[in-house]
Image 1 (cartoon, one colour):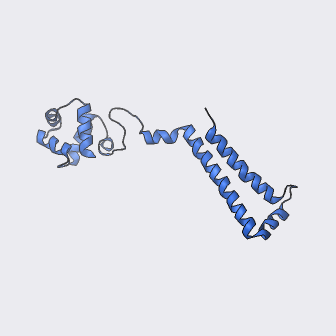
Image 2 (tube, one colour):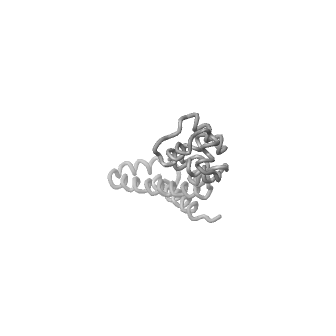
Image 3 (cartoon, helix red, strand yellow):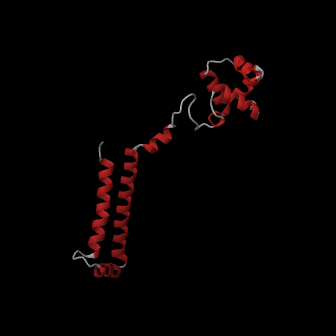
Length: 152
């Protein structure tokens, strides 16, 4: 919320409401109203605040913007860049794909045995088509589990 951000940046800068008001050319009461959420600063005052705190307007008004005075990336973005987290998500996805394929294959065998027979007849490998499909699904699940459980 903008009111909280103004208060936070002012306190981090070590300024009183009066000192900040003096720097940007408004009354102390205006700063008090902005910080309490009673009113909001006009665009030119937002510009003056951002210049005073040495930040962008985005950093001033957006909650997810960078923290004051640093180029620190928000924690949500850091988590998505973590290679271990990405591996974990890929592993979970592979496990789910394998499990879903096995369930669908089992349903196909029960509901339409003729389709399973056609799959077996279409296979040019000595292992039947059903066997290949099962092996691929299980392999997907094993690779997914390996990625999930892998330690760095």
